[in-house]
Length: 94
Image (cartoon, rainbow, N blue to C red; front, side, top):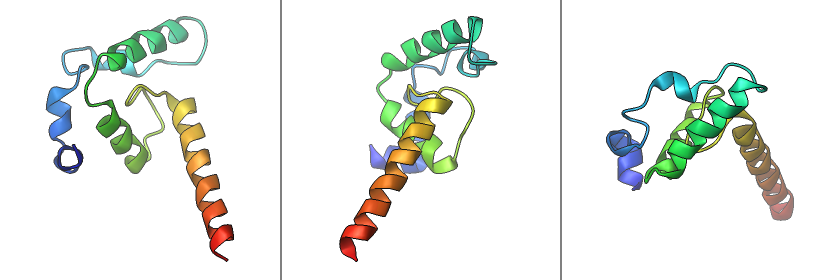
C-alpha cells in the first residue's frame, strides 16, 4: 500500500475514478453543498484506497475538496491533532 502511495498507483483503483470530479469539490458548507459533500463521502466509503488518498491530500496540503473520505474541516482537525501530538512528544522528550 505504501508503494502505491509513493507511485500514485492508488489512483487507478479509486472508487471516484469514474465520477464527475466536481462532485468532490462542493461550493460552500451549507444547503446543497452539504448534500454534495455527503454524496462524495459516500463514494469514498466504498473505496479501497482512502488511506492513500488521505495521506496524499495531507502531504500535499490540499485544503479544498473531499479526499480520502474527509472534507476541509476534517483535515484541518487531523492537522491540529498531529501538531498537538508532535508538541506533546517534544515536551515529553525535553
